[in-house]
Amino acid sequence: MEREHLKGVAEGLLFAGGDEGITVSELSSILDTSLDEVRKIIDELQTDYKKQSRGLMILNANGMLSLTTKPDHNAYFKKWVIQPKPNRMSQAALETLAIIAYQQPITRAEIDEIRGVRSERPLQTLISRMLIEECGRKETVGRPILFRTTKEFLTFFGLSAIEELPELESTLDSETDTSDVDLFFDRFQDE
Image 1 (cartoon, rainbow, N blue to C red):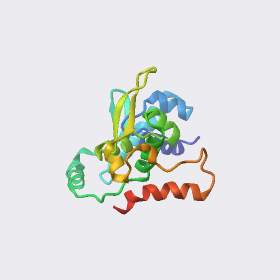
Image 2 (image 1 turned 45 degrees about the vertical axis):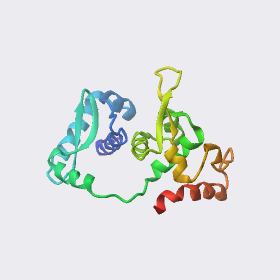
Image 3 (image 1 turned 120 degrees about the vertical axis):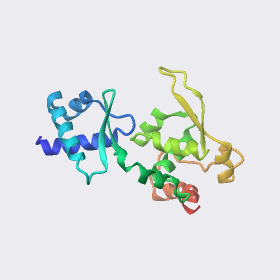
Image 4 (image 1 turned 45 degrees about the horizontal axis):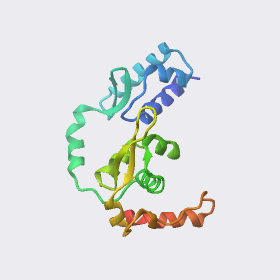
């Protein structure tokens, strides 16, 4: 593969790594290239990001590489954080909430497996809105945290018990089935 293509893939992997990040050796394995080549690619990306017009930088924290915003843009991010936000949830948060509602109690790894992507940010959103909560640890290797919906979730949807959730087919084959589930969660989009 040509270097520019590898740089693009590496940049995407840094983004996908989120807050957890990714190591040089993981990048080397995924890109199927040498550690030295990956280090050169990271150096080139860091040089690209040092340009004043760029808003991101690569952070190396204890060998974990991740994309982050530049510290000198901090004032703008603080301003953004304190602005009132509409009461809408992202598609990722809605997906995560639906998975937890129907599969609870469930671990983050199990949610990630169902969604096919990492779910730490949607989980944080749902916890901050008090729609889900931690409910113990799974008796397995690593004892991961289990999540479940809260009383606030039931109240918001006008349910007295989780058993009142609409039935789901074992597979959602038809457009009608998915639209039924979408209608249930559309209430978040309208508020």
